[in-house]
Image (cartoon, rainbow, N blue to C red; front, side, top):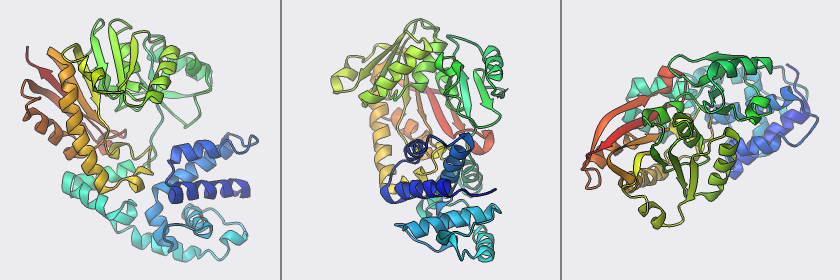
Amino acid sequence: MRLHRNLVFATVDALLEIFNEGQYADKVIEKTLKRDKRWGARDRSFIAETTYDIVRWKRLYAEIAEVKEPFSRENAFRLFAVWATLRGIELPDWKQIEDTPTRRIKGRFDALSKIRKFRESVPDWLDELGVAELGEETWEKEIGALNKQAPVIIRANRLKTDVLTLKQKLADEGFETINLKDYPDALQLVERANIFKTESFQNGLFEVQDASSQLVADFLGVQPGDRVVDTCAGAGGKSLHLAALMENKGQVIALDIYGNKLKELKRRAKRAGAHNIETRAIENNKVIKKLYGKADKVLIDAPCSGLGVLSRNPDAKWKLEPEFLDRIRKTQQEIIRQYSKIVKKGGKMVYATCSVLPSENQLQVKDFLASEEGKDFKLVEDQKILSSETGYDGFYMALLEKAN
């Protein structure tokens, strides 16, 4: 592989924004890719994947390069040189990366790879937490799986198509996909590609949604005609799935504290042909109180650490802090206690997170059931999804039923 100066410089600029300014990797990469209209698909892919790679392995590469944060521009080039050397890419004769000690890089990589916190590139506290909550063996496998690049999975929109028709249509548009056993609406792209420009996407035939995430709406067991409340809807991936499972019959009320996310959901719903979704921004408690005892089904896709989705958000490893985890656990318990009041007698509720930590999952459900608000509920079943077992996002979901 021949390295091109403008692509490498763009990558270094992106890394400095992500590491030194605390910007989100996906937003920085999206902005960086718009810098030069002449870049083709391969150029853009190089920038995106190299940036994500170096973000993912930041601790390991920084240790090998012997650099510390905040990184100078020279430091960022050293990180890049480590990345390239470990991939066997011949370094060009540029002053920014001259004198790269290739042999020493490989030697340090071999030595550091024997220590998990370097090999899997995680902060000490997170490594200790993973072991404490999951046990040494499970954490070892899980963090290894979460450090692999996530596959691109799409969900066929049943309101407009089915999996087989969509598979053929995408093949006609030049995108090869494979069906996934046990995920009825899912297709996986054989090669990573930008599928947002396809006619199929523009016409609302599919949404990009991880396979694990696709299990959540199904788990709630919605029926056409139900009144369903998606309490933490965000931009609405699961609301759209609920609408499709309900065949556009009944009502999905999508709540969120962020109005801009609900605007995006409205756009997506229009494209998807989902007419039974109503968005309501949570501007105060009245919005929630009005719904007390009114819903057949309630989905709480709770805010969480996001540890189950590190494969698609590797920068979360560096943004997460123990204090945030303490706060989010408190928020989760407040949310489940308050939003459970929306469930009517005999109704059902799913509490879900994209975390693999029991303290955000099983223990939250246990605490809720022991609380005043949870006394009329029983746990029907729960599901713990580990990335190391499925190859998809780590997830948790619990189905709870309210007594009549």
